[in-house]
Amino acid sequence: MNKVILDNSVIVKWYLQDEESSDQAFKIFQDLIDKKIILSEPYLIYYEFNNVINIAVKRGRIDIKDAINAIELFNSLPIIKYDFLDEHYKNIFKNAVDLGISSYDSSYISLAKEINTPFFTVDKDLITKCKSFSNNVRHINEY
Image (cartoon, rainbow, N blue to C red; front, side, top):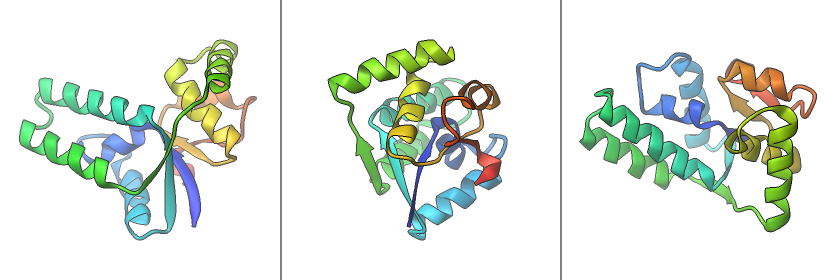
């Protein structure tokens, strides 16, 4: 079984059907359910996911009942969760500054580099900025 790290921009596509590139996201979701892949994520994913679902409710993209179901389903998924130690925070910050990306994005790409695991996103700008840092940062269409 292959490990993957997914950006929140990919995961929310499982729950918000009006998102672009949802078909590819659902393929990844199906592989997770079929135990063809292992999802590895920083703990940050739970906060980011909750925040996007919250905004989706506020904008009328999803109702509160479906939002709660989405959060419960996401929380039930088999995910290897990574918490960062003090020395990791320094690297996350340094990578964010060096690459011109957010510390949130840096936590994902730093984890991908550390555990040598592909990180999939739909953020083309992030992929471009990280090319020199790691070949593990890929577009969802490369899955």
